[in-house]
Image (cartoon, rainbow, N blue to C red; front, side, top):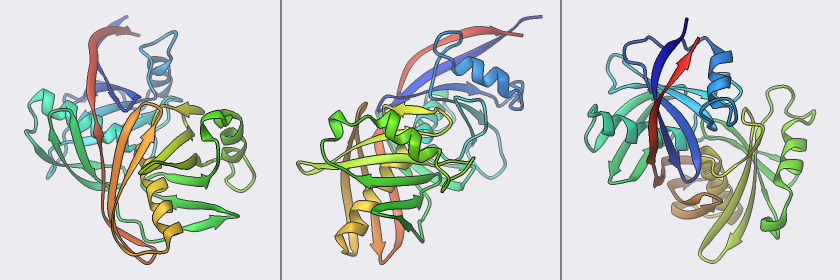
Length: 262
């Protein structure tokens, strides 16, 4: 028997997501095969991931995020920004919010189509040869390169994501290059298993890598261009400790619709 569900499609700098208002708990979050099918760009709606907005005590809402492979994922920064816009559009919040995600409590504010999302503090990092490895809610590998526009990000990112160092869990792989007053970043995302137009936690990890490479402490605001648009990351750095971390950028509804599921 077919069941009709309503969905919304949002994008944040080209990172696109299926959003479902699940405050009635009718959507089965354990049906990973269904989630994978909905994210399929040929046989479903299509998206880099799917998110459920749910009720939870002491917060405005809860964010449940699933990668395009149908499995529950770690924190998604652009997804979080899109879900804040979704909550505003549903009338759950106005301009400011506090919500719960897989990596804990998040604060955010929204003005028009721009969402400024508070991210977790980062206390440590490691090196993989010349690359920085950080967890900004999701694990990230950040490598500084030249001529990023012509780089085969799928091939090189796939190889790093699946190598023996990171094992079955893998890692998100970011390549970064300085340009003008900011930086250009391209990302291969695990779970999507492809290059995406943007990655919020990857942009944060890349900006932190810039600060680590500089050797300086203090307040940083770093523009990051991604294939799908422009993001801005700000934080306070003290040694290898990062606090007051914010990810800012666009979050826009693309369309809404209904789909039949079995």
